[in-house]
Length: 118
Image (cartoon, rainbow, N blue to C red; front, side):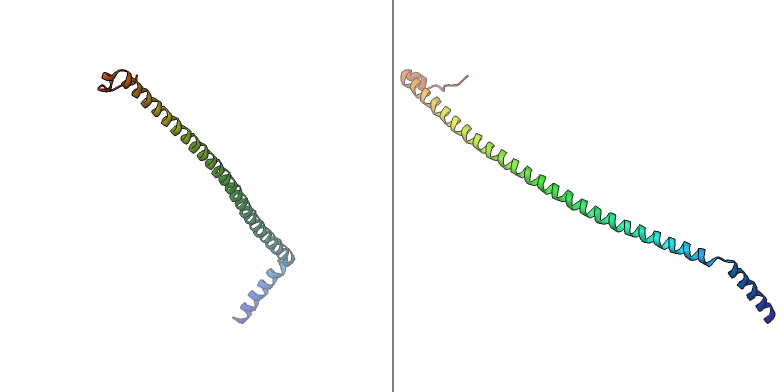
C-alpha cells in the first residue's frame, strides 16, 4: 500500500509541476485588480448619484420657492381686486338705493311696489 501511495504522490507532483503557477498568479492578480476597479467604479457612481440627487433637490427647492413667491403675488393681486370689487359693488348699491329713494319721492305709489331691475 505504501508503494502505491508513493506512486500516486509522484503522479500528483508531476501534474502540479506541469501547472504554470506564474500564469495562475498573474490571472488571479488581474482578476483581483478588475474586481477592485469595478468596486471603485460602483462607489464613484453611487457618490455621483448622491450628488445628482442633492443637486436635483436644490433645484426643486428653488423652483418651489419661486412658485410660492408667484402664488403670494397672485394672492395679493386677487385681494386687491376683490377689495376694488367690494368698493364698486358698495357704490353701485348706494346709487341703486338713492335712485329708488328718488323714484319713491317723485312717484309715491311706487313705494308700495317693489322696484325690480331688468
